[in-house]
Image 1 (cartoon, rainbow, N blue to C red):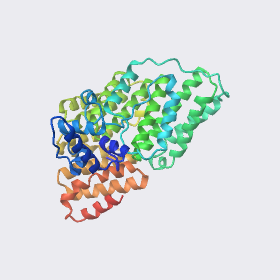
Image 2 (image 1 turned 135 degrees about the vertical axis):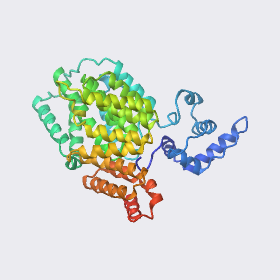
Image 3 (image 1 turned 60 degrees about the horizontal axis):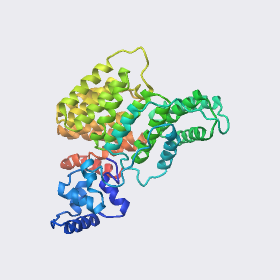
Image 4 (image 1 turned 120 degrees about the vertical axis):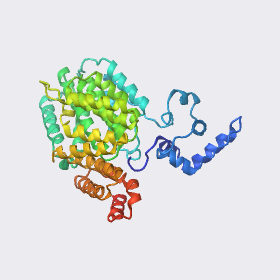
Length: 441
């Protein structure tokens, strides 16, 4: 989890300017005002446990929290905790009327760092968006006869340079975020104010979707989850307008990966299931099955996890006459091995986890340094669970060195989350220094 706001309850408090103690006091007041005269033992420590996902409030406490925030009680019955809390963002719907609106909304969000670590869309909102994507037939690509004519050569140049920027090595891509943002701004201006034919409009929507997806990953890697979600919403809206089902499936997969990353695996299953229905390429299906396996493992659903892992392996080994979609072309046996290992780790099978993660790391090409940094932290966690502390220490330092060199804040955050697992071993030589380094990073 990233720093600052990590939970919808913390975000709801922040919107009102309440401290944890303020919320506890309001819960006590709500209890006193109940006709049955309820009493609450809620204090600042209890609120802290709720906001760090260490504990879920009881049904009685949830009722009092709802009253403190003036949430209608019907919302508690319709939506699971904590998704009924105030402040939940709703995605921009799909359809030609919303393509530019979604892009402008995302660009505003990218400038707002106050909510940069909050998970933007609830499980309910993501399920609704993915169902809309799956069932709503897109209109024909837009044609605009207003404004200045859009030059096809300019669109050619934007497409070519976007491809070049996207394909740069990991270490160089940390410097291209502003260039990608500028490209996205230009394409949005062309869609909003330009005059173009239907084929050129489709290319512009496709370019907007590709750029918004990539810019979303830049924000995600920096821990700016609010902006990432908004950008992916814009990407999905424009991919839908361009009638590119495969790209839309990839964007739903991005939403799902973010949900898993933020320990919200329940929000990942439905988007991945919808994406699987509507994409056919075996490499794409392999990645979607693998990410759904990760979600099932995090939820403790062993049978469903193993079923998806088997499907991911079968699909990855299936030949296709067509190239894989760009968004999943990197998918490899290394990814399958490491993420399978992470599934085993979540399911408590430490030995299997370590074997699979180690295998995947040995297969990963050097060009994918950001992925290597993430995989190294997975390996460190598996080593800690196996009580191989000195080896875990070495691997974590390697991950932190790599993440610092390539400017991958998300990898640094993942390494920092190992501090609690290192804490019991602080007397081991080097552990205290690593913990200090992680806290300072």
